[in-house]
Image 1: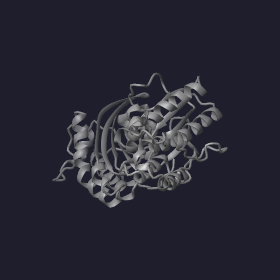
Image 2: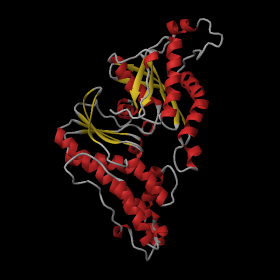
Image 3: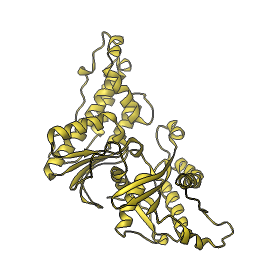
Image 4: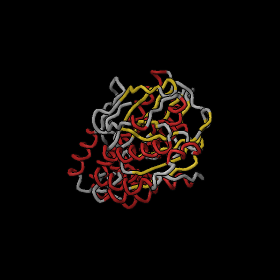
Length: 370
């Protein structure tokens, strides 16, 4: 069966066609129109600007996704003649769309477009939680997927707005066991990068600068200036007896540390390295604790921050060391940041389970919890 998926929860306009059989998925197309360059000058996403660009991009993006999947269909019958007959010969079995959480004006664009197409084509709709979409990116074809994912699994899903530990006992059974009490890791990266003057988005900027600290040439250039060992940030809640996160204090530590260091602008790589490592240490410690507590068979990583190379590598090493009988899996980089293919993956499993709705029943929820 084939699922047309649409994602517009924030500032990416995305569409994809996913084909599924059993528990195996095939990606027929994956189209993403990013607005990063538009919002970069503001230092973050401006909701109304994002929504306007979704309106401009949504139909061209869907058309491109269908074309790449070798599917030729009228999107809307301009003369309103025979529009319902399209559904009978339409190779699409259902339309999956992100219904929350996210920016309300952005979500409306995707949901209303999906609603119109589902009505015109007489196809069922699947409302997908954006966070569940990130989690189900792990079921997409991957170069590092060595075996079938086994349950129970614990999922670390970490992005700009969300930082969760999720217990997954079976498909579509998602229980939040740990949440962020303030800033998510992705938000902490953005705020930290802004303090360091590295721009937006913050995660890739901090990661790139942190990687420089491993270069001996940088240490030579900074001869006479203390290395990163003299910079130490707290690891918030790392030893607390729960699975929750908090990163606002880490950002505050950086805010207070910079004015005290007259040479901080020459040591940006040092600060980026320690700041990133503080975040990674907390994420890994909590995830391993959850994996051991719930005796899981698999640890999954998901969300935009899962693109961080150090997090992927260090978490894989920590699982192998502390939970040698537990498998570790993370999505390919193409499916870590916001995309419609992950929505198609989650939508496929919901469709299989009969969790569909008629077009007139779609409702968005910008605060939709798992």
